[in-house]
Amino acid sequence: MPLTFIHTSDWHLGRTMSRLGRHATHVRQWRFEAVRRMYDLALAHHAQFILVAGDVFQHAMPPPALLDEALHLLRDAPVPLVLIPGNHDPCEPGSIWQQEEFGRRLQHLPHVHLGLEQRPIELADGAALVFPCAVTSKNSPDDQTAWIPAGRRGERFRIGLAHGILQGYDGQEHFENFITAERADLAGLDYLALGDLHSYTQPDHPAARRRTYYSGTIECTAVDEERPGYVLLVQIPSPGAEPTVTPLRVGRMQPRKLPPLTVSPGEGLYRLREAVAAIENPTEVWLALQVQGALSLEEMEDFNAWEGELLGRFLGVDLDRSGLICEPSREDFEQLGLDESEKRVLELLEDPARAAAAAGWKQDDWRAGLFARADVCREARAMFYRYLREAERDH
Image (cartoon, rainbow, N blue to C red; front, side, top):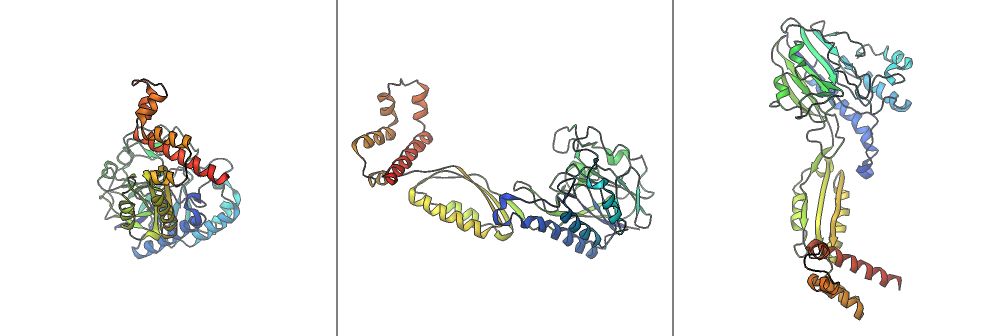
């Protein structure tokens, strides 16, 4: 008999994101909506159960209102569902997982299974054994999957469920919340469902060749995440057979991080606008943009207006403009009606060699070398212009 189930993790229920501006508080609800979209997919694909590989909650002690919402969400699961704690919501003393009231309320949800103990859970009418590996502390030095008994593939479906970092997954060794890279083979697992990393495992990854997958977070949590907002549909034709794993999108937010863009006066904002205009479905996109270089006064005004437009068009905008300066032209300075001393300063700022000589700096002096840099000169002229404008306003 074939086995079909949904692998998900990192719901982070209760998380908000202040960097999304007007949508910051909406994110909390979007996570619930993503879970419900997963429920629809589970029905559409005839999944026999759902595995949640940790970090169900953003914190180990969710507030009462959030807990009520979460219990209603779990109640509506259309198929049996297995939960384990992760490093954000570890099963520590005082955590929600050890609250008697929580346990009593879950008794009314017989289709929800808590994987808090080191014993297998039978699902799919006994055809599948799920081995839950609960995280019991935020930073554990132990491999939580070590308890899974060795077995042979081919008898019953054997599925591991854990939360942590698979050793060697990203090219580094990990010594807290780690999972041995060979666990699926050592324990004879047909599939090892993992949580913690927020992008799902692609089929050409070495871990996938060991039947080990991360599902990624159900909804985006950071703009630099590569593949958030998915769950994995897992289909195994028979015990011991290779799984077929298909990512299914359920999240709303789509992070998009553009390469740093450098602008110069006179070029206008064409390249920048063109790169952003090419992004499809902006109302679903959380955009990260780094702009550096210099703009004329007029261009800077256009840029500021355009930034306001972005905030209205995109779901969220994370704009780094710390490396962007306003570079005034000679005409901009002249319009301020400079006195003789101010003109003298401007002449020196426009002629670094002359300024170094006036200061008595030798050619090999580090200050002369620094002042000869184009970016330093630009910033100095911009600062001088801002000073003159502020002085003008004060008078």
